[in-house]
Image 1 (spheres, rainbow, N blue to C red):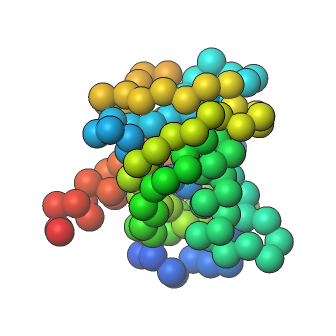
Image 2: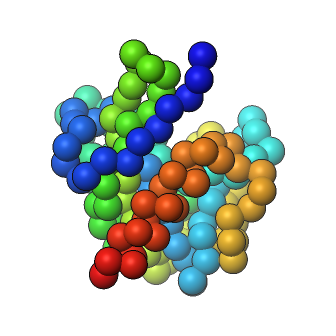
Image 3: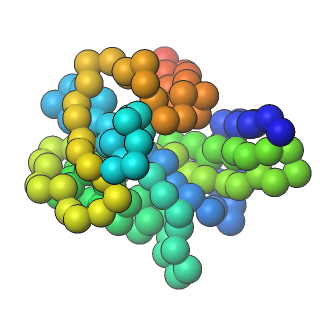
Length: 140
């Protein structure tokens, strides 16, 4: 089986199963490390029943980073999975102004990085998201 991911225009791939965030804090990328892994990842997770993607993004961002003050902006949709079994997500840009303590969760720690580290949990997804984010930045 092979992984497939594709960036799509915002609002074109719902209903959404998950959200992903590209988070910046003090001019650096803010990544989280799951307790059961040694790799780093962007914040994100599943959209719960009855939640909008924005509500899910706010919940997941807090749970996985401790962010308490931030600006959240939807960027684009992302579909990922294996051919024939694709899930749709909404991707957000986040400018974090204040971090509180990391709440008890599956995350062990958060860290700010000047550039993305080599040891990412989902390197292909991060590469796709950063490329699409950069294209949007170039157009603005």
